[in-house]
Length: 320
Image (cartoon, rainbow, N blue to C red):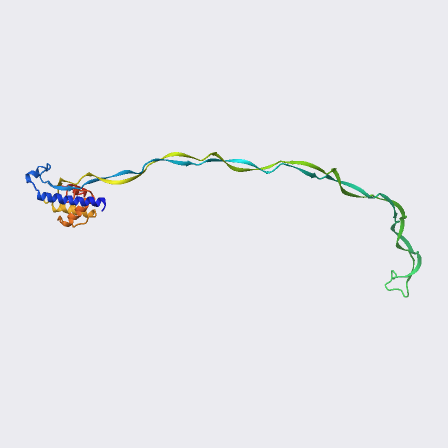
């Protein structure tokens, strides 16, 4: 059983004990009315059981007390650059080849010479007029006589002198006779390239420096050590409940058949139903309405058992 259920159970038991004590040990009415509050006409009061009031608090308990322990402080290191010899210094002999240059020169293959050249004779063509037939006298037939209508009888001959006849003849004649002249044949040369030594080959000594490489090296700055340390206590927090106000009975103003109409009861019933505590809305305060009212009162930490003014106000129903 949880703490809330246990408190509710004790509360119900206490209510029953108080009610039983009121029946068995009832005092005279005059003695009980001495505790009633000052009231106006029309007000009703009832002795109601006020639920116990609890508060939640946090309590811290020590699970393990503090003590002196020790902790290991690790060594401290740093990374430094270190030069590592890869190849030592040495002396190498290097052959320097000879230096040549290319020289271009012209070489005579055949010297200049003279050789005879025959110059042929030169001719020209010309036209010459030559008499083919000299002039001569001969008879030539006539064509007719002047002054006659008809030709004469017989032949008509005329004595004429025929001119000489000529012909054009193409002839060649020598302009220049054949001769011999000397022609100069130039020398024949050839241009070639040759290698000329500028500097002879030699041997040199060269100093090859040592070769190093840089590596990362871890260097210890401070060794590991142990030092005392205060280990704090281990605590545990627990959430607890305690009684602030115990279960008690008090006079509280209530609604009863003296100051509450059926319409007021119906308002209360509708307010309960609207808040999820369903009941009939007939204006009659019966067992169903009582059960719904008590559930509402317990849920809102109100005095249970009677329709108190605090309950009416919590439901939002006007008191008057």
